Length: 299
Image (cartoon, rainbow, N blue to C red; front, side, top):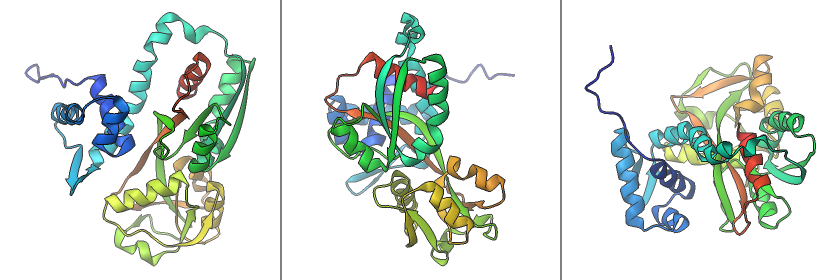
């Protein structure tokens, strides 16, 4: 029987937008500048959202704030619903039925380009055969530079945008997994991180940044890389050959895990989740083509 005495949870889309901006920038002040709000208004929105959800979203460490596990979970859960709500206006106007045409250059970090974009791009081309997309891949830092220089119309990256001349928006959520060779344990004590060799992505990789930041937030020591590669598929192959452990997008390792070449390894109770971002030049005027392209790739 439903409990008719319970009060519904009430919060606003604006509060979620402010929360997402703080998660993206890592600072109340930076989020306030981005949203053209006062720091007090941002802090109040965060407090009201936390009270509505009855959970702690941020902890203060000295002068810095650190997102809690609940905050990362909220970001993952609210990403797609926020995108759906933001697209309501265009859908009511019927824009989604119009043809997408012309060339567009998309730059994406290698994991996104290899595993997450090909299928939705293929579906999009079936519905819009006059669209002419070009997809290039690199690490997140290089993708940002490409978009900032105007060499790409749209970018997708794995870590928060680092450049002030880039405008980022939440796109979707990705799950990272620790993988090991078949002989690796199914669960690894966090204290045993240093007992294993690690195959890592290169500096500037969004996957590596998120992995190392997640360990730091959990108070865990960052492992030393014995092998550095610039491709997630190379990581999976190296792990399968016995080079050690690695942290990769789940999408990058699913086939190898299903074939028994690698296995997923739980690191205590730690969960690695990260938001993925669509990016454009900060001074670029959003065009209907780009806005609808992002929506279509999200759906």
